[in-house]
Amino acid sequence: VLTSYQAYFAGQWQESESQETIEIRSPWRHEVIGSVQSVTQNEVDQAIAAAHRVQGSWANLSMNERGQYLDRWADEIEADVNALAMAVMDEVGKNFEDAKKEVLRTVDLIHYTVQEALHMHGQSVRGDGFPGGSKDKLGIITRVPLGTVLAISPFNYPINLSAAKIAPALMAGNTVIFKPATQGSICGIKMIQAFDRAGFPAGVLSLLTGHGAIIGDYLTEHPGINMISFTGSTQTGKHLSQKSIMIPLVLELGGKDPAIVCQNADLDRTAKNIIGGAFAYSGQRCTAVKRVLVNEAVADELVAKLKPAVEALKVGSPAEGSDVVPLIDDKAADFVQGLIDDALAKGATLVTGNQRDGNLLAPTLLDNVTPEMDIAWVEPFGPVLPIIRVTSNAQAIDLANRSDFGLQASVFTQDIDEALEISRGVEAGTVQVNGRPSRGPDNFPFLGVKASGMGTQGVHNSILSMSREKLTVLNLK
Ligand code: G3P
Image 1 (tube, protein in one colour):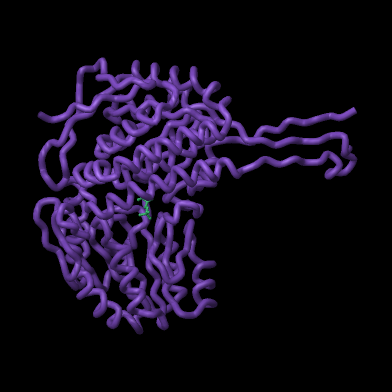
Image 2: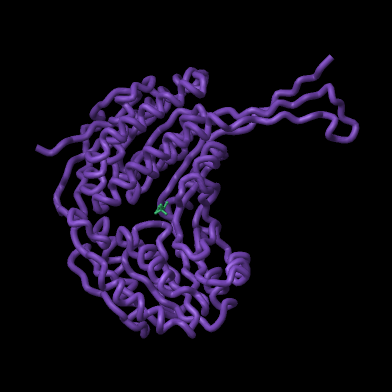
């Protein structure tokens, strides 16, 4: 019997009044693994009202008390690590080892968020710091919550990217409406079952599943939502920013992260980083390496190192520990195949790959990719890596910056001055020198520029973005 998972309305697990559910299929078992509720707009209203009712008392708890709840939640997640990792593997097709890493990273993230919030402090400012001001005027700056935060998480890190929004929101004193990606919502529900076991006051968090067409815009435009933290596609992020009115938004969107390979790069190290960066979890990461911009002087040597490494990747079922696993759905696989076909039709060289079995695509390496090919610019979110040969660092920087995206970039060189010069030239939230793009460690700021996002995440910055300054001025005497 398949489980019909209930939604979590202000501390109560319930079926939706719609009496409709959405089936969730495993991308690799190719069968339905459960169903989730299709909640109604009325239920959205009720959950948000409950979130507001309890927000004041939640914010009034001491930070230590809030932290104790969160620490208990992290402990519950840790106690459930194998079941949660299995859920991640089943629902989004990540191999078990990586799924387990995601869950344990989440445990660390929650504990770290508690500690970070406990160690943050406000400021005071003196009136006599400004011409004509008086030292009898003293400003005390504290941080206060925004109210109710809408957390929308993506399929590819259904546990970690949910907690990365929920934990800072709660530590800052907000209440939360959590809308997981539909594919990923069983994982979201299981992590909120752990939340429920931690005994939080009812209403501090509600988890709503449902159709974007019914509750997506409704949530975004809802006057009871005071901040939105979203990770997902650029298309949805742009839509959110058009729909939400005068509330802070943090958006983490797509990327087309380049690996810029200079003439004197350590090519073994470079190849290792490119392979892991491009193909882990079939490239379904916003921070995957999505193009290589390599100096033509070392391009042949690099390709010769990449080819056997790509061919050595384990391809197949996540249950067998594969690196390259079936994509999240058939549509995703069709999209990637379309990009490969376009590149080959326009004269790219197939180094290896381009085989397909349903939504499982072999890792594919394309050489001699040119700016005329879609794969040079479009984010595939799949296991295909284009190699673009360049004649200079200036050309690499130019191509890097001609992308709409600006999440991260990697520079491979053994010359620190060259690395810094390229870093200065590249428009991206982060430049990695001699390493693959990566969001973590989670205490680092994480941000994208241009179509890659808005605002900054990472634990410290997330707490800041989910609170605001409040100034109290003491006028003495
Ligand atoms: O696609 C999600 C993005 O946040 C990637 O995270 O940890 O794989 O760099 P990570």
